[in-house]
Structure formats: C-alpha cells, structure tokens
Image 1 (cartoon, helix red, strand yellow):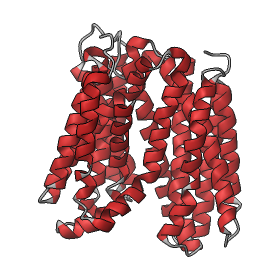
Image 2 (tube, helix red, strand yellow):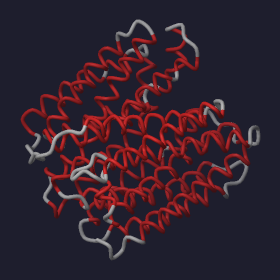
Image 3 (cartoon, one colour):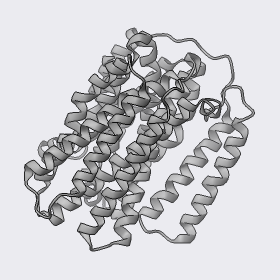
Amino acid sequence: MLTITIAIILAVLGTVIANIALPTMMRELDSTPAAATWVVNAYELSVTVSLLPLAALGDIIGYRVIYGVGLTAFTVASLACGFAPSLPTLVAARVLQGFGAAGIMSVNTALVRFIFPRAQLGRGVASVALVVATSSAAGPSVAAAILAVASWHWLFLFNVPLGVVALVLARGSLPRTPLAGHRFDWISAGLNAATFGFLLLGLNGIGQGQGRALVGTLLALGAAAAWFLVRRQRRLAAPMLPVDLFRKPIFALSVATSVCSYASQSIAYLALPFYFAIGGGMTQSQIGLLITPWPAVVMVVAPIAGRLSDRYPAGLLGGIGLVVLTAGLVLLNMLPPDPRFIDVVWRMMISGIGFGFFQAPNNRALIAAAPRSRSGVASGMLSTARLAGMTTGGVTVAVIFGLLAGKVGQEVTVALGVAAGFSGVASVISFSRLGRG
C-alpha cells in the first residue's frame, strides 16, 4: 500500500501541479499562452486515451507489470521534463509522463483488491480515495511551495527520488495476480484512443470558444469512433470497454453515479474561486483557505465510509452522502454577497462530508461488481469515470461563464445550481442500486 500510495500521489499531482507555473514556463520557453496550455493538455489527453487499454493489458500480463512499467515511464519522463530545453520537448515528455500515470491509475484499485481480503475491501478502496482527494487538494499548495524556493523544473524533478523509492518497494511487495488467457486487442485500443481523444479535444474546444466547425468535426469523429468501438466490444468475450460489465446494473449505476458526482465537485471547485476573488475581493491565499475545508473533511470521512461500506450497501451510503452534498451546494448558493469566513467554511464542510461519504462506498461497489479476472478493466473504468466527470464539469463551467460573461454573481449562482443538479441526480442513481447487488 505504501508503494501504491506514493505512485498515486505522483500521478494525481501530475494533473494539477503544472497549472500554477504555466505563465512562468511560457515566458522562459518563449512560447504563447495557447501553446503553453499543452503542457497540461498533453498529460490529460495521454492519460485519458490509454487508461482502458493499459487496464485491459494488466488483466493479460499482470497488474504489477503494468504498474511497474507505468511508474518507470513516469519517473523517466519526470526527469526529461525537468531538463526540457524547449516547449515541444517538454510537451513530448509530458505525453510520456501521462502514459506512465495511466499505467499507475489503471491498475491501482485492481491491486488493492488482491492486497485486502474481501471483508476489508472497503478500507483498501477508501485508502485510495483518501490519497486521491488529498493529492488533488494539495496540488496547488505543493506547487506554490516548490516555486517559492526553486524554478519550475523542480515541479517535475521532485518526482524522481519518490518514483525510485516506490519502484524499489514495489519489486518485492506487490502481489502476483492470475493472468487472463485472451490476447490484447490492438484494434479496440486504437478505437478507444480515437473515441476519447477526439471527444476530449472537442469538449476542450467548447470550453475555449473554438470554432463550431472544428468542435463539431472533432465531436463527430469521436462519436463515430465510439460507435465502432462499442459495436466491436459486443462481439468480444473480454472487451476492453467493459460493455459486458455494464449489463450488470450495480456496475453501470456506480459508473453513472461517479461521473455525475465528480462533475458536481469539479463545477464547484472551478466556480467558487471566481466568486471569492471577484465578488469578495479575496487574495489567492484566502481563497485557498476557503476551499481547503472540503477536501480536508473528505480526508476524515473517507476512511469511516470505507469501513461502513464493508457492512452496508453502497447505494444507501452513497445516496445519503450525495443528498448531503446537494444540501451543501444549495447552502453555498445562498451565501450573502460579502460572506464571513465562518459562513463559507461550514458550508464547505457539509459538502465535503457528503462527497467523502459517497466516494469510497461507490468505488468499492464498482470494483467488487467485476469478476476478479476483470479487476483491471474495472479499475480502469473507475479512473475513466472520474476523468469524464471532471471534464464534464470543466466544460460546463466554461460554457456557463461564456454565456454569462461579466456577470460574476449570476455566473456562480447558475454554476452552483447546475452542480447541485448533478449531485441530486447522482443521489437518485445511487439509491436505485439498493437491492441490485
């Protein structure tokens, strides 16, 4: 669990840690703002398109192998990022780093399933959820601390010694798991990459206000690739996109709950800082303090919810948690124009309690719904659902802010209302799992 924890921290930080240094990178590498954003986009894109193929490959050759190769690639790519002399070199290294992160994230929950006995699986899954939540929340603070004493290169170089330590620990500790007997499907891997790649580029294009023709073409290509992918998967005994597992209501509903819930959280995380900065005139450090209660409470609640999920159904625990999250978002939407610090904090804590109570039970239900031989694709689907929800939330905020440009109070009110809608739908989906598994 220690080697898995270290690797998850590195992979999650890789998603958020570079954002804060983009202006500095742009200036030092003599680039433009649009080109500099590819330092982030390249990482996210390579993670998204490779999660499911690497998860499926883990079922075939072993989860510890995929984990080890992914961690090695991530560590080597971090070294290359730290010494990158130009933006194209840095972007190329970030692509490799994203593939490495996908190797880690695609099989980490599958490995946890073989580390913990079934009666304690909820605790193991809760540990992963805790690490993901903590790393996501700490990313900006870690980046700020590094940049306060060193150049942006060390945002990547600090990964290297941690990656080496995790590799040494992994060599003698990770369990060997049963191997599937089927072959890797390269055609499905290509269709998967085209589906998620085109769809992600199209959705990002909506958020960045790109031309309708370009966005429409990308989305159409993604939809076409998705149609061919699903059609092919239906004919396979062990599909890469687990359409066979989606026939199980508990699995399909858990994925839908995850997508809606992460979309809700992403919308709140993106919209509230604008409200605090522009509406309340708060500094960056004050905004950070106001956002912190949400992930801080998740850190406390997730282990408790994980233990409870070993005894009580995820549909009940997740449904209750998401009702609480919805209430927290509604209360945040009722903040006065000039809120006191404590008024924001207790509302953020309620939202964090709700999200923390949903996360671990939902993840446990999703991974446990799959046969042990399909743990890899289930683990990959868990990470894919999280990324899909976060992307949906980001695009939603971009569209709302674009339509209501200049009306900060109204923008945030609408965004938080939509976030509450997503979490409300998620709670209904969660409760619908009762009695199904």
